[in-house]
Image 1 (cartoon, one colour):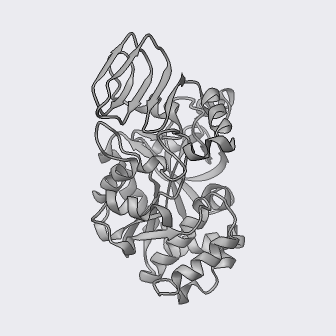
Image 2 (cartoon, rainbow, N blue to C red; image 1 turned 90 degrees about the vertical axis):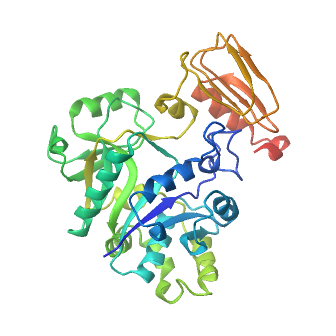
Image 3 (spheres, rainbow, N blue to C red; image 1 turned 180 degrees about the vertical axis):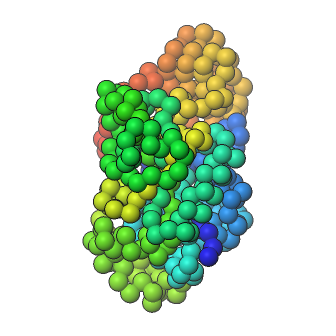
Length: 363
């Protein structure tokens, strides 16, 4: 029985616009200070847990070359290339069938590419514990993060057993899911002692993932009928193209996890953040300067009376001067200068306004 990791990197998120674009998702954007992208960091983290040849990346065809440029050690057979973006359920189905064709006894761990993990040793320990539990049972296992605050950026999973049932640290059966609750509801969840943050990290035997998807989302699995005849053959891409043309766009959470009667949750305490937008990035980064600023500037800079702001520039020959701002976002990219309050509604409104055809070249 071998263990495999699938890194989910198929999004085309514009939540970090103008740093990320439709053709440059946030997981591929390199930090100007470390020169590492989220994907590179995630791959290196998983490389300490899995053999290099057992790490796969599920992504879109159009991101193939940028990914191989960032991770040249990858073999092309380790890329699970989707023709279209259909969210995580179809991506996990595709990944499961590809790995099942190679290893019917495989255990699969799926991880998003755009997460921050603060203490990799504790993370590796949690993943190892989850893999061990999954190898000895027929359940699917999600890693649940013990909440440290009533954060509204994350999804929550309620576990059975009542208050503090998860504090023993052993897997507990999942009961309900709630995606990004209101601040009031998040407080109720945390105070109840019955809820964990949903990390989006999912573990199970490949055969059991396949079986549970057949039960919970037959609208997806029926499209893959006959997959055994195509995976790993020259006809695979044509077959997958047809499947994805008809496939619904749905996350694994909605398609399987919320419906499954076989889902358990492993309470985990590693430092974790789902980096969904600029504010969640800001709130969970620990490398802010003495004024609370998150700074990533390729060239020289002069910041004065700037507090609690994000300042980013990829212009190595340009001096970045910012003065007298608090709680602002400043982004200077090759073709966009973006300055606005670090307010999520304003950021969302800007992304909506970009739908105007006049801004096609900047999306």
